[in-house]
Amino acid sequence: MAATIIEEQRQCHEELERLQDALVAEKLHKTSSHREHINSEHRAYLLYERLQQCTEKLINNYEDNDGIRKREIDQIGGPNEFQEFYNRLRKLKDYHKKHSNEIAAPMVMEFLELKNIRENPDENEEMVEFSDEEGYGKYLDLHECYEQFVNLKHATKIEYLTYLTSFDRLFEFPKDKKLNADYKKYLMSLQDYLVGFLHRINPLMNFDAETERILEDFEEKWATGTFPGWARDPTSAMKSGNVLDLTPFDSAEELASLGLDRLKTALQALNLKCGGTLEQRAIRLYSTKGRDLNDLDPSAYAKNKKSRDEGQKQKEVAQLETFIYHYTELLSEQRTATRENVERRQARTADEVDDDDVDDVDDNDDDDEELVPYNPKNLPLGWDGKPIPYWLYKLHGLNLYFNCEICGNFKYRGPKAFQRHFAEWRHAHGMRCLGIPNTAHFANVTLIEDARALWEKIKAEKNKDKFQKETEEEFEDSHGNVVSRKVYNDLKRQGLL
Image: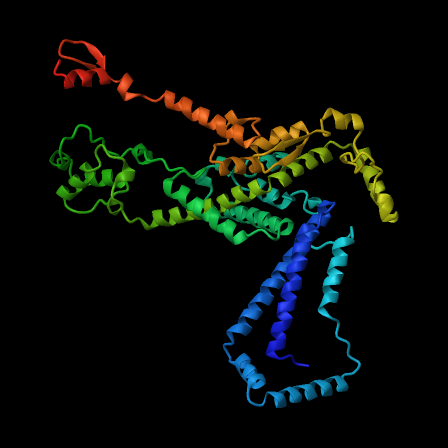
């Protein structure tokens, strides 16, 4: 039976309340494994998308652009409200009499089922698709991008493990080799994979806001010429053999004696307009004497369509690179885990690989309970999926936890992970929020108060090294005596000089 506008609105309000409660319960629910965490994030994402759709539908109903809601309210609130009530009641009875066998499940049943899925997770449930190499979001699978990279014309042929360490060092690639179609296609493939992987492991991430922030930072660096790998050299034009040395010339008239052709080639070498009369060319060229080319009026430069097109291509390639830099930083943990996983797999012998294949076949025939190894001390698992030896666990200090207040009181397991985190994105972000550069001076500093005190001390020491005019600037009086600025001013005011 078709519901009225008022009933649709009531259903939307009910659904919104249940969605909000389910979303809060989903976020507060503690997951016990990586797979459960990924599935929980995707369930929350689906609830959020449904909440957005329900909200848009409710807003459209309240806006009532077609006037249906207003007419319905007028009917149930008009002078014949009782007649309207009994007419609707009769239609309702006729409908249920005609469809007496239909049973409508209440909305609460759907959310109870969702609650049951959340509290009793299935270890084989897959909310999103990952390849075998990705380990359900634990590792990156960059084999396709690696194949594209090694097939680039000017790329160095490296191993896959080396590629995992250096694939984001795009600034080392020769700038003059970046404008070909293969390199841009490689960057687009790498960006698509990183974005898709982030979508799969963190679906609630606000990608629109991240993209806007990345582009703002890129535009600022590109405008100042400080973007990695694309820094502009203001003296590059001076490397041309046609550039004219203006030091011997004291006026534009002396430059005019060189003739039209020589002035034209000199202006072209600086990418400046080369038209006009002899006097105009001489004045235009002489105006660059002793000045930085970046300080010249933009209208003085020649409108070279080829240069503009090349500059636009450079900017497009650099924009792809800035996205890869940012997304790689966000995936630093997965990247480190991938490198360690590849190293572990490459270190296995042929017998170990065969044993793993046999174990996989046997495990598929066993029950799920037998897949869980006996691990009463909660030791980390090794490459074979079994707990590592206790002596190795103690040797690496994995029983120790180190807390970092700058990282939001995040706990790191073992001294190796603790020392490594000072160069990772989470600690760098915390230092950036404090307004402190993440330099070597702050190694092993984990407390916010200590970091601020050290930063104040460093700034104070830098201020001591600055030149103090009052005490260090010296003056000489008429008798040849050298005194400080303060003493000189005092003597001058007293008329003793």
